Image (tube, rainbow over all chains, first blue to last red):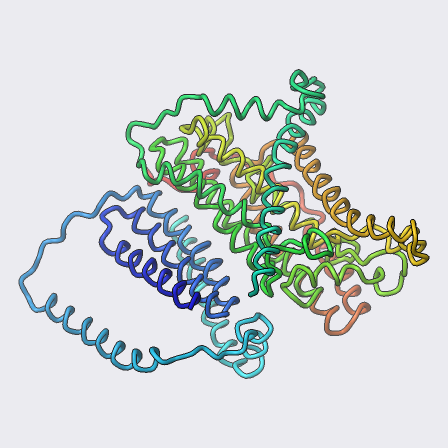
Length: 166
Length: 400
């Protein structure tokens, strides 16, 4: 009972803050609402006993990526964006159609599974040890591939930064 | 969770916050007095014994100060920033064990204790960053930008330093890290405890962590975000009254919390420096000695813990009184080109110890030191002119 109340409170905060990210006219407030969204998402992970993912969510997204986002927004000192000129074509209705189509598919497929669900995962399913064992034994090759991908990203970003400085 | 568990949790939270807020005036007093002694001054000594009540007087003064809001400030974010600066500092120490008994164990002895600390300390950048931006003042903005760049850069080195403690203990759990350090030194010396700082990886990791924690709390010699000679006071220029006090409190509470983490991870937490206590040995007889033994058994661990924490706080002040502020490019070079490579090599050699044992690891440390001396030891100190407007700033303005 208590867990369900907690979930609904967190879910409402997460949805409201996600809406605020899109509808806020001020880029800094938008970014801050995204931080709030990531933070509530981490709390939802905690309530599902996925503590490791929850804490990584805070460290990586709320703590590092969003600080850089804010850093860039403040550096450029962006005002609120001007209204884009509206073109009368099919893009907008098509975007609504696809978006709501995906939403409807997701909701219809997942709600039926979620409503009667009683979480029965073992309490240590989200611990660092379990995740580490899975990553470094069963999923070792995908992990190595991800490492290669990240290395490519790092080298690429260094290359970009160097070119600008010279 | 039963009602009793809930009660214990509330008690532990109250104790932690009570310690942080109760030690705060003491740290502020210590900073002013110790700094005065270092500089051959007297310092505040009028109010109360040794001037101990001076922080109270300062607090009362700040309560009655007029609060001035800058004309073009973003008011909501401007008011939010001090709270965001105070919050991570207050909660960061929640996974630190203060002693072995039920009241002094961490508020939450979770499996991800150390990661929780890094998550909270990574949130500390927001308060400073938003304060700088929302004040709508160029000095504040520069201070905020410097702070965020600095905190992000040194978080990496800090993570590598903490990873040595995690790898040596085999767990993120803070109590496991302390238990690991209760073993006999190096597994062979019986009376001395195996504090991490006594091992080669722990010594290097601890030194790295100490440098990173100075940078992370924006303290001298890394206090560029508030460098008063160039940025007035950086991000806190426009703040007055209790909002300024919130930043001030956040800074000192963050120092206490981070010193508690360093104590737990590298200096043996609440353990005594000797693995033997005559009172405990006599306590086995029962009677008077038994009472005394249980009393010291309950009181000594927090005593050792606080002693270590305050020794580290004193180191902060000592360094502040001794070292000059770094330039921005020096700060970045130190973080990215020295601390992070050293941390990575240290971590690699610790894994060698974990897998193959002492001998290959020590050989590895020898090889690493020789290689460092061969490649970098004979290099002359670099002398070059640095443009303070471009290279030494966190951003590069467009070419005119």
